[in-house]
Length: 188
Image 1 (cartoon, rainbow, N blue to C red):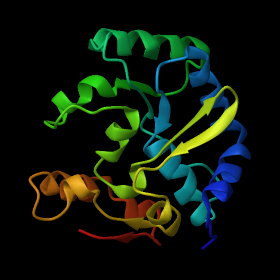
Image 2 (image 1 turned 90 degrees about the vertical axis):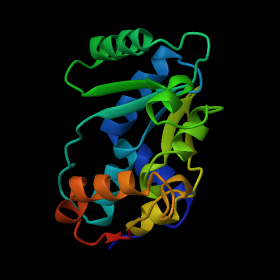
Image 3 (image 1 turned 30 degrees about the vertical axis):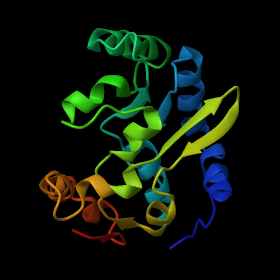
């Protein structure tokens, strides 16, 4: 298994991928407040690298998040998805405003996009990346250790003994990541 040890090495991996950078440049064009491309977009890139896959694993969607308390209606998200489709029509865009996602997730209101990322179910999924004025940035509220080590574990909000733990368990079982990436260590 190839190793990534630091956030700088992770940034180098991302920066070396022309397709990934194209996605980030496209999202940057929208200038959404506090926006990030996150979750499976980054997780899949890293896990493919760790498993030395020759071809990119296809994505169900490209998760783009942002934080806007003023314009928090879902129809704004659909407008942004359409703008992204106008740039890159063959990509599976999914845009979500973290200022309203606490309602969907039955949680307390998030304070920022990074707070929203912190509330994702799995630690290696709780990561975002973006270009801000052309500079590559990473948001990893729970760190990158689990992601770059191929460890799947719940974030604090989905730990055993908490109401959302069953959501975590069900999600991990349904995703069947161990079939695609057999070197993963999955903890329930």
